[in-house]
Image (tube, rainbow, N blue to C red; front, side, top):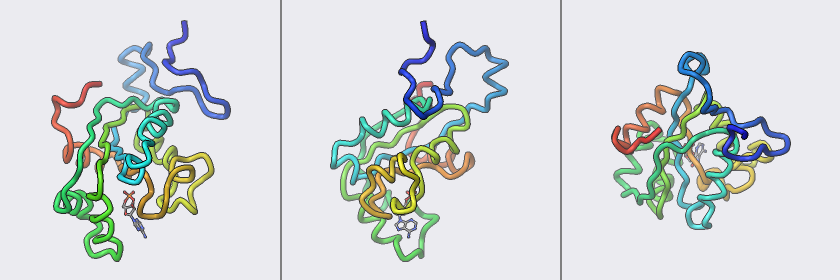
Length: 168
Ligand code: CMP
């Protein structure tokens, strides 16, 4: 029996998260975690399942997930690094405009792999077949967020999740 939960997709590598590896091999494979957000434009259009399918088919495991609505203050705190940028206020309004799905993704090189799957911030510049190319409405309503480094991933995961909510 195959050890992959999902069938391979044409043109894409097989799932990278191999449950049959021993602990020594797993250590060498740099299993990482990253923070992902399905944004209000995507939850409004009922795209959560379609987006999660992209992650799972590429071998990322959703080890924590919850649906919440941020207050403007919470959205501002999460995106504090963008304070002063011209899009900051509008981003806060957008990110608090409806439900979001916050999730922790785990897998080999999860930070880089996730950013490859979601594509460039601006959907007009995103590679064909990425989530943002296929689903995003604009550079702001770009359907998903993904941590840009493992250091930021750890901070962003801690922003939304306690240890007991993460179930690898
Ligand atoms: P995200 O990857 O979540 O990081 C910051 C967000 O700000 C970005 O996705 C977009 O939703 C939003 N944004 C709006 N305008 C811009 C812009 N010009 N450059 C970068 N991010 C932008």
